[in-house]
Image (tube, rainbow, N blue to C red; front, side, top):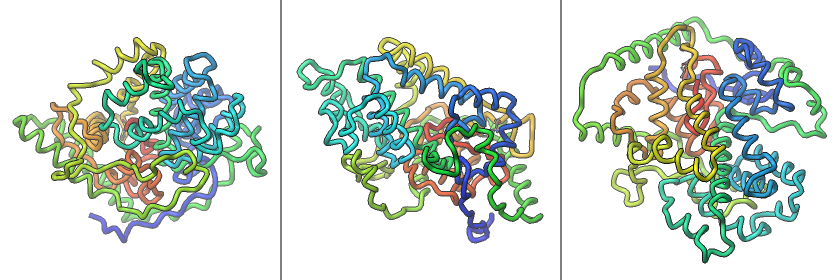
Length: 430
Ligand SMILES: CC(C)C[C@H](N)C(=O)O
């Protein structure tokens, strides 16, 4: 095991779409994806998000289709309202990138500027979404039937229709997870249209082709050998996991889940919470309400939810299909693409079956949110995910604004950046 102190302290990159990934690397790794350029060219102004997500063209395609559908002119909620809901939702994760982007879009769509002074200036109907917004962002397990009833029942004033509410919920969830992606990939703010260094007319390729940032020193030979061995070891563990036939009792399976959940508490280093800037805090009510860790004896611990009792495939999809059919299809496609997304690569190796590793990551994120798959042995998470990876994943998923370059650089040091690009939805991690 390498000592913490031996890890080089990474320096933030000065320019380009991401503070974590050098612009040149995005170009190089992107060039390996044949369709990337096409996908990027079809995005009229490829922003930093699309540029980084374009490392996975199949995912970028689904993402953009979903986002475009959410923001197309027709639909139950007026367009300015939809931008405003995204602002409120991204503010919960302190994502000034999205707050800024959608404040401009809100104005362009004809929104009433005075609302941008803060939540208290928005219509009461929008303000009533606050509770749902904060629960969805930080502790979704607390949402009950009453929260929905309160908004849609005939006596509710002002009342939300089901069609409006489902659109608002998808908008909020979309913004929450996108905020995790933005923090998790260290995405830089978009250049101001007034700023000199990046004229808005620059094409994505031009913007990427900035002078490369000062390169860090190449890892020395010993470090490289060590890294190669780490990947080798991980691949051996994956083989072992695949061959494992041992069956555990249901009780043992629960214990293994609980163990993983309890251990995750220790993962992120506690950082003192800084006061929110006014540009964010004006859209946040109750800023101290954040993700709450599981505690084995704590009364307020998140309950466990069995994935078999409520899942997208068996329940979520059909409900949404009735109320917002187009979105149900798009989200379903997005989930399917991401579950199947693999290039069969592992750092310097090709033709690898990475399914066990991807499944461990997926299930680990569900685990931190208290979701248990009762046919999955959580011992695999423990075997396959190194501690630094868990710290990163947990931070990006639960406290995205605390993700640092150091966390990003500490895990999977041998892997391509495109393999590390991560989404707090728990989904893009290839
Ligand atoms: C999680 C990653 C290591 C996935 C891998 N790059 C793949 O193509 O499947």
